Image (cartoon, rainbow, N blue to C red; front, side, top):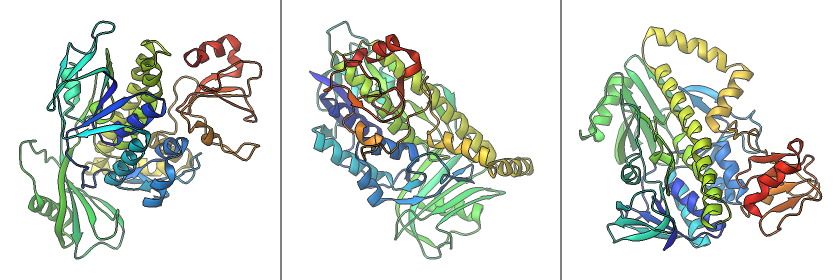
Length: 456
């Protein structure tokens, strides 16, 4: 019987698999696709995601393949990331297929097993079997028994459906067409974003040799069943932008909408949901992939403790309690960005005022912190930022084993195999494996003993 089965080998599923194996948990990843995708898909990593990778010693390969940009966008309006309190105050432009390749390489290095061409089709006896009874995951390759199942299988998640989890939200009001193409007459700007009376378009140069073109037309919501292709992209772009920039040689054509939905609960018994299986929304602000990675980072250490028997099942409830509000906020801000991107003189006036606000340091920082996830707090405050230590190391380097850190708390006995002790941080702290505080000195020793209990 497997400890954990993960459905989906996208960034969320692979990040979760790495976290579980780092903690010594056996994990099997089932992926519907027979081979890694060649499509570009998402296009960047935010500062908090870069911190997550840094905390596990995984960042350097991503930096080597990506390109840093000091800014991001909110409804197409500029945000300055260079002022953010992080070692990585930039957007790293790197397409999803490269992110997946690097994460898969790390997962296989850790011993994660990945079975491709396998799709989840059933779940027995349901998400909450009796104590000791395995979950039986029916797949196109036969049944698999497991203790826990995590659906990282996208917005149309089979796992979510089989677990009976509702997916409420708002339907699509507009359809965007996306194409990775070559351009005979590219714009001078490498990252061109424009809003017109007919809709919005962007022409983005992620990598040399091709461009990503995205266009939406005001009020044009296309049924999911309708086929959309290269000529549809070209025609819509001409209507909205007045030109097709000489596009040719399409590599990938896709679509997305502004539908916004969120799983009513992220945990149903021994079934959990993460990434797009838990929340879908427009790609405004580039938050989807990043939110999924951070879901996995929150869930990984908790599920590992429960699977190893070091913590009770109730710890898994904190995954929903901590991450569901984050997902809800992403849905809210992407809806707001959609409203701010609509054509019309009323929205023109609103954008002018919001743009003036975003030009102020306070508003820029607040919105940039939200979009990048750096302001997320799980009760005792936001994540503990990296810092240089007196011994010449960095704080994040001490999180690479995926263990919590007990800093500057003399006299409290801990098992060094499970908890890293650290001196010189300057304040008594228990830092969770995901870099968030679990205890602070003023809370007292009894609270510390409680916080340490899962790692005793």
